[in-house]
Image (tube, rainbow, N blue to C red):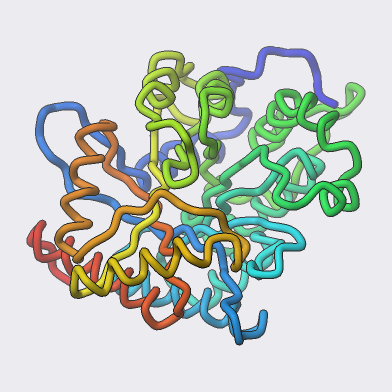
Length: 347
């Protein structure tokens, strides 16, 4: 539990914390509503699929290879998801995988997409991500979600009564943010999440509806809209987040990302073939049927530019659901290549 003080706008208690907030903001460019088209900022959201005929060890090797390749191709972030007891997905502990990926890369930002906060103590989550932030200064994002991440009995085995924990989520998030600002107290006694990195993780809420956007706006965090798995187009969700955003010591202005699924191949026909495969095999690799942008690299790039203007958002987390490791890697490479060609970027 935490003190009943107002969380929004909590003062930083040390210069280190203030400096870390400005550093995190500088490293996360967002859309400037000036009428000028900004370059896209692309990141990777990896569900860490264990594809048929492969082991979990191979799935994790492929995750590292994807992060390393994404860094080389100019992607800004590598985020990984959390799922439990799903046979087709190999990452149940983003904080562990990110520690390994960080040691195998040099500069790409490392994030959780997302840590499913209802399952955990806010102190433990703060300790996990402060440790990562101390290991990899200026590179760590803490993405938070409120989904169960598994089937009912798995969820109960993990953390008990999930519905009760969801009801407590606003207080849990508030406690976590207090811990990241060194102002948390338990029964009147100060508790510190250690280590205390010079640059704090940047905090994001992830979601697919207005409830998650409401949390992010009230608490002054960034917001990621999961467009690829939402029944809503998200325009009203992002609009409500921006309109209701309360500046905080975490960040002074609203920041958004869209998580989108893409199926990209050199030829239109090849991309269409993969879309058919995905439609036929939905549910077999731990995923549902995603809403995907599909086509050639330049065609997908144009679709992303359309979303950029539609949502007033220039940063995207890219999920590629192609059920073949080589083709999935090629999808990310082709998109990065198309972006460089269209935006005149140098490798």
